[in-house]
Length: 263
Image (tube, rainbow, N blue to C red; front, side, top):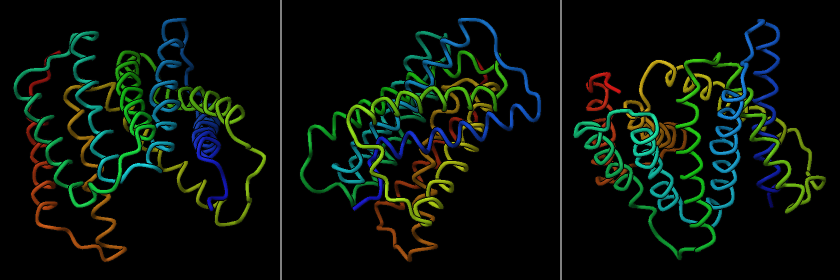
């Protein structure tokens, strides 16, 4: 059995990363944002990307096959692309649309060997909610990222999302029933600081410099890294269809990177 309930762990993971980044921001005397609009966007990013995103992936991923979970959550770039086009005026031309489609097809092929088992409708709904939350959070983050320091902005949205997750955990779980062990503490720290800590800051910096619709196809690269880690550290072998999918994911990134900086 897991030493902690999923929402409690999600809240602690986001909270630890947020506190660490907030302390770094204070020590380095980084400017904190001002204005109601910016703080509303920070709150929306935290509620979507961290709150609903974490909750959906933690609760849905445990009851749906890894392949299906990966396919569903990777609908997010399409949703975010349309929202950025409509709300932020970012270009979504044929090249970017093709890059998204090729990347999604690549993810489907990479996940194909694990597309099995029964489908839990509740888990499916949570994963769809996660995709929607991530999409809305990314659009909100893109809208305010040029105005906000990346470390401050990331810390703020992580703490906002952690508070929402903590409330949900208190209502639905037993946060006090944590089995504290050295391995659990190490897992919490290693899962909180590199990601969502460091990776979220880097994503924030990229969004401040480039349109979301140019960066979206690169989110598919997480599957490439996951398979690489499995092959190097666990001796996992890739099926032929997965190699084809990886080529598709890399091609999507190459196609998106050559797109003009319009929008």
